[in-house]
Amino acid sequence: MQTIHDAAALRAAIRAWRVQGQSIGFVPTMGNLHAGHLALVQLARARAERVVASIFVNPTQFGPDEDFARYPRTLERDQAGLASAGCDLLFAPTVEVMYPFGPANTARVAVPEVTATLEGAHRTGHFDGVATVVVKLFNLVQPDLAVFGQKDWQQMLVVRRLVRDLALPLEIIAAPTVREADGLALSSRNQYLDADQRARAAEIHATLLAMRTAHLGGQPRTQVETEALTRLRATGFDPDYAVIRRGVDLAVPADTEHGGLIALIAARLGTTRLIDNLPFDGG
Ligand code: PAF
Image (tube, rainbow, N blue to C red; front, side, top):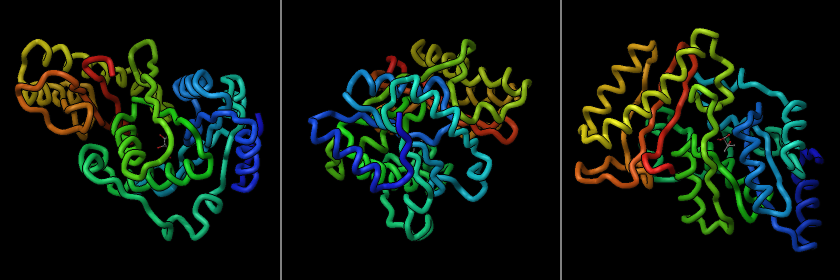
């Protein structure tokens, strides 16, 4: 696996594959890779002749009080993991390559509607930063397909909307969430948890399962949501939301609507903010 840090060398490598008629799968990441990321690479590997991954801790998607500075940078370990998962090329650009005029002065891409709620409402500007960097990465890599994890369900919807609205010529593939044995979704932020928090963190998935059971059992949505918040607080979480929404657009479902629903949670344990979701029909 080769690692490339600048745009010109990346374009040359991509061009060489294109000349040979090879298809390209892409997995964008912020590094500190875990088995969930490597599953995305394996999915891309199964669907394309060449696989490119990127590692870029993107400053424009972090708020001023968020963890940009302390986000773990583990390039060497990530390179080994990517190579073992079948990645052909790692693109690991600098901030200067991605934002030549500086992150604050970049042209920006904003996705409407699906960004107005949940993560978009709690993390102002987050999805503008994601959409901007993803479009730039797509322009650089020019993949036939890109793989995103369902754990960031709203991000996946944002990227799909971006691709449709801007007629970007690639397919977006959603990969199932990879979990620890106790149900905790794999996340780079799990390593911020101390032992006690880690033991309690599995309560997010347990609460999602309980929300699904209660709602499919006939309990009204608002009651399910209230009970989920109570349960999370009782375990020491400070929840931002615990909701049931329509999976396709995150709109609040009508009381008569039962297909295509998803439960989503964002909650803090100490200073660590975790998110997870559970599509009621499997995603
Ligand atoms: O999901 C992530 O790791 C990031 O949001 C992404 C898609 C790599 C953009 O920076």
